[in-house]
Image (cartoon, rainbow, N blue to C red; front, side, top):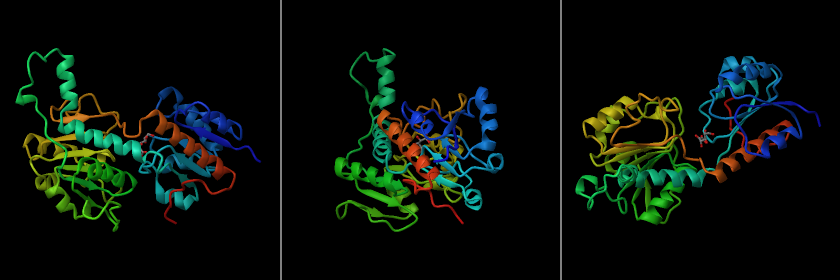
Length: 323
Ligand code: 8YV
């Protein structure tokens, strides 16, 4: 079997790099690290495969890699790739759906709970030595059990979130999705709704839809104006779906109660972002899938994908590209 050249642009867990090296020549170079950018660029002209994540691949980069056959992303989201261009160039794109579903749903429900019950604030309250007497109502949170959960995007993660809410916390679930999708829950526990219904009726609005030209900037001033003043927005998808200045304005105008954000327009979140220490924002560092087990499973699946693709076999999860 012909040894090809694979460029690894994101650190892999132990054992996964060795699996690649057993079959191909491998260059490890992370372009997000300035000291490794040149090595990354130097490797592209002879690269047959790329594997990594969290780095935007554009046409200019593809022009530097004329032998590229496959890109294997260690992610379920594929917004960092020029899909039409990959299709035109007949470069396969693989990703890692499924293996992270439950971890991300766990984390997003933790954000629902943590935001509503003010978990981070209460922890900080104890750490700062401010707990001197019984908690006053200035530190009270709000109930989650039985409240209405609205989900924007109803793929694997949205459905896993709905299961947690409906079956674990007796929450009525509304979900908005592009295509008709069965709720996957017992009758009456969840129903498809318009975007307006989700915004107007939900106590929690959770975003788990992909970032596409249609969803970019989708949640802006008009959408916040429709939400309940006690509503909390949770974004576990991609930062650019939410207009961040509109969110800040909505918080300052008390149009909504708060936000739990795991993703941002710019990541890592800039030190001077007002979202970083806003009193009604629970901000986490894109940690939805960040468990030892899940990140290992994602890397294993991404390595399986690229090894299969370079053997000329169908990978576990190729993303359908426009032709
Ligand atoms: C990834 C994600 O872990 O899968 C995705 O689309 O956003 C995260 O789960 C992140 O891209 C880093 O690999």
